[in-house]
Amino acid sequence: MKVLAKESELKLLLEQLRKHTREIYVYGKLLAKEYPADVIAIFISQINKEAKKATKRSMYKNVCDNIATFAKMGYQSEAIDLALDFQTAYRHKPAFIDELNLLSAYLWDNFGIENMPTFTGVG
Image (cartoon, rainbow, N blue to C red):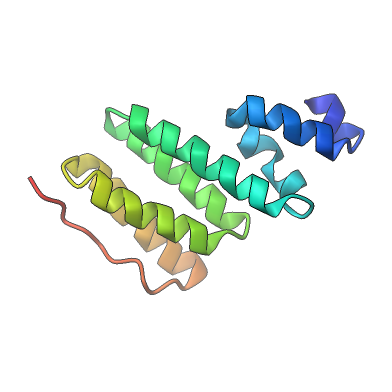
């Protein structure tokens, strides 16, 4: 994938990225201008996979860090939607909710996003 990126073989790089979605954090920005819908879909898919596998606070933090990376790449709206979905889907995981609330504060501080509520979850 490094060679494809270096040679600006974006179409081939995208094909490889679909097979190795974890690499979205490395190559997403390079592909974002040419293939924005694909980059969004791969980001969301990868973050959802990570969230489903997360079982402890460090993993929840990693998921939230990846959502923040997604927002930093210019996909603030999509990052917010994902975080809000997780606040509902994982409401029974208080440590995950804590990390999502920290993410909400980060999004507010860095992007001025006001519609990120904090969430208390349900037992």
